[in-house]
Length: 546
Ligand code: ADP
Image (cartoon, rainbow, N blue to C red; front, side):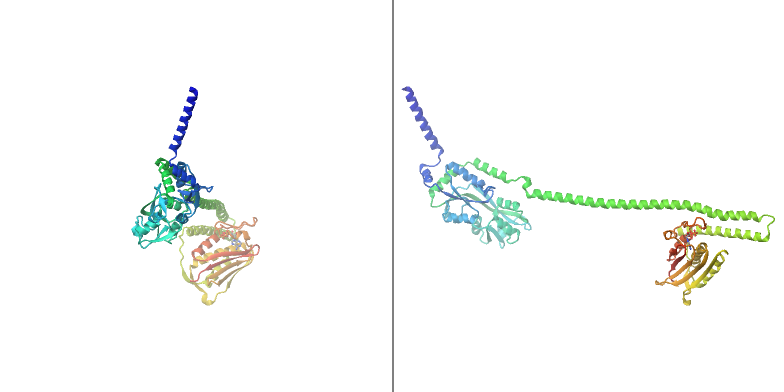
């Protein structure tokens, strides 16, 4: 019996405890709860385009700060509302005005709207600011915007606020915040007044250039719920539910979204801009280094080539000097030996007068050769050290050539059948010229002596004429041994001789043509040769007319 009594008591206290706890957890009165049960399909308008407050996630589900507040409210009320998603604020408002929805989530109270809705306490506050282009001053007040076109989102509470508080402003209603800021950037309007957070987010996400915040609009959107004004019971229920949300719960929701919205650094435009600039700088540096490296290499190659050429030249010059010395010693020894030998022979007692004359002549010729060689060496060193001075005078050119021919004819060895001729193609009026006659004679003598040396029989002709550039042009033409084409380009270099026939010895220093070239250079003339090997050579030179 006692047991049965105990059981009944336990059951009774359990029932009381359960009913008490239920009563304690339900924040609504019986009537309010009853109303909700009678109206299970209360509709609430939410927006898909107000991040971070109300928007759709990747799967198309409504998310955001206000949505989480709504969820918390539903939890507190132990009741779910029917959500209708809108993508346009104007439509939300219109649906509210037309009683097509029962509740609007997140709306600012205004005198106009009070005609249609009951408003709960706000659960969020959003500051408004003035946006202008980069060229605007840094600090602008709303009063400064008179006479400018100021963009506001059509039907936002700020529009109503500005109309009442600043009637002198010319407001331009625009569809939404994005379009407002795009029109500002494109200079279609001069300023935009809208919510700070959302505006800044649009600027960053959509990369709207040349727009900045210039001032405070001194207006905060205090957003709460709006309930159609023919449903006071519903308004009371919502307010009751909202009052249950603690400040800690609110800030927890807010912090969660602020964290989510501070995207990782690689998703921020500024990160990619910095990366782009770094890559660009790196690319440009690499390009610069590559070009520099290439130029450097080209330079090194050029210098190496120049050095190689200089080295080759030095080696060539060294070789030439050695061969010159060997050649010179031969050229000097030959006449010296002759002079020495025939001088000794001259002292013999049984020498008849013919032999004496012959020996004396040989000594004379060799003395002449030696003097000529020494003269050439001295001349060259004078020219090369720039010590040569031209003595210009007017003289009869034709007469000068005749004199040269007369002297040189005597130098033709008796065993050669060679004729020396002058082919004069000048008019008598052109016989006189101004130049250095001694140096001109030296050039002729060199060329004629060579012609005599390298011609066994035939003729040596000297031509004088004018060329097309009205310069005097001379030619010494022989029917001698000629010069191989491969040798033509070096015979004017000093110490250079053509080694043709090893069986025939042509004496010479290899200096004569080089002296001619250098003398003509000083006299502003030129020298060149045409030759057919085995048939003869023609040496041409020009002199400017003075
Ligand atoms: P060289 O004193 O040896 O004659 P040059 O400088 O006057 O020196 O001449 C250089 C070389 O050019 C000669 O050794 C010879 O090989 C060639 N040469 C010059 N003139 C003639 C010519 N008229 N016919 C053939 N070869 C010539």
